Length: 527
Image 1 (cartoon, rainbow, N blue to C red):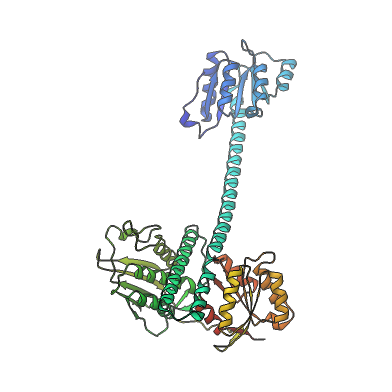
Image 2: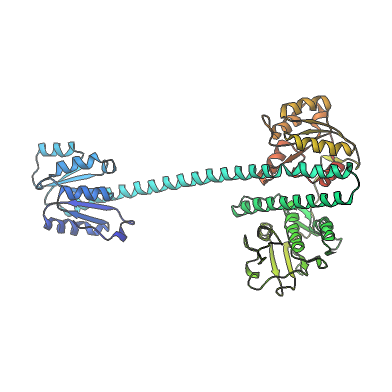
């Protein structure tokens, strides 16, 4: 029994020749070699069965008259095995009559050739089965690829759903904690120790929120799941406001913050939320690695070509070792911190910055003179020479400080009650509902000016609530300002919220100061 080189098996189809005469092997091999396939030869039915168990064949050339197990018996046993039941068999014999041919076809033969064979005829017949085998192999490969792709897409979808649910479940408890701190600050005794405890809770909740956001966004970024909502936005204003939002954090840590950004507008085509996230991550990074008494400066300038802008954040912190600098934007890359990990973090923030900036067609670089000499990060983004006229808005802005009828639909009782208490302390008239249907019933009676609605509600979800409100024929209800308060913060969640009719999407835990500003600038639909 002779087998071809195993290295060739993966690239060619297999042909089996079964004949008890060695000289016949030489003849068939010389005829078939020019087809360029793998040729197996053996001298008995028993050897053929062993080969059929080990290999898949495009076609089997089987001699009828062999000592011991003849060709008909061999063919019958080949057909009994599931793996080889449909393998084409061509009988070869020097004796031909109608009875033998009928017996051969009865055992499942596809053809019957008299010997000696005509080489051209044999090659032509074998070539057909080679092409059929290759087509089957290609079809099977394509089917396997489709199955793998389908399985991967399904796994991807399930992973997306899991990440969304994970974020929702992790963020949900943080909101009531923050609300409770604000309530204690408003109602509790004026005690410095209580203020210090409140500050600690707020800092740790903010830290946990950032870790959750970084982890989820880094996962989505790696899988290309982050999309941008691009619009004309003022980069100078974004940089100034983001830096100012961080000033209290720097002040609390004894770090001086300098903002050197012109009041002149500088427009980019970008996603404002993601730009704030990228700049905020750099500021957070500078704060984390700068000791008290240090300095962090934020500056921006237009490029000499007039088509780009550079945002630079410098710090006087611990610096970056030369060996770390080339990989500082890699996922999970972190400076050596020691066992105490006093600087914290997951090593995802800078990787996110790089990904977000590149999605905007820009790039980010880092420089440092080494350990103890601070670091400098620069974002370079393409800018627009002129701002297109802003489309007319279907909203008019309400005056700040107004008090509203607010409906809060939230199935987490702690979150609902803590938010109700806070909003009531602000002077708003607040009613709560814990399910979607109950919320709609309250809405039609209460006629809220503002609806704060969770997305993940039992029964009727927040998207259905928003659609129902927008489609309500009662203009007093359909014109309500509807805000999504949710732990689902993916891009797809925000897009679905807009499509459902929400005016604003706020991701939990909700910063009450942001919610207060949103209410103060409540857009009123103009009809």
